[in-house]
Image (cartoon, rainbow, N blue to C red):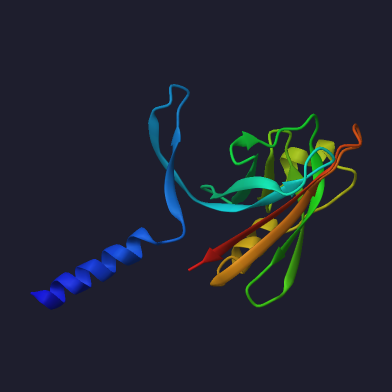
Length: 171
């Protein structure tokens, strides 16, 4: 009996400490839908002309389909909204020490979009093409260990630029 209790405890402990969590989409009334997504929260800092080294929380989200998003929350809880959308270079340092570069869409509502199909953003590009962002980042995120991501928010409209750094561990 003691061995069974120990096994149950180990199973529960591993389940509770799992990295990716399951979330449910909601409808316009806020009611939970059957469709789910995986997510985890990562923490770090952001800086811009007004502040240095402030708290940053990012939600990393794998949607149904072939999309991976990073939603940035400055000061830990304020969406990193901006006046325009941009294409940004995102660098991910994987646990094996390799640096992976991605050219991704940074929406005006503060989300980076890693997609294999960026057709929704083609009208807004400066002849920038991206290929296999979702496939490539999902391959990198299979590695267990500490990951670091850095990215910027730039603009052609305003001189205000922000830089972001997050770190998280995949177990």
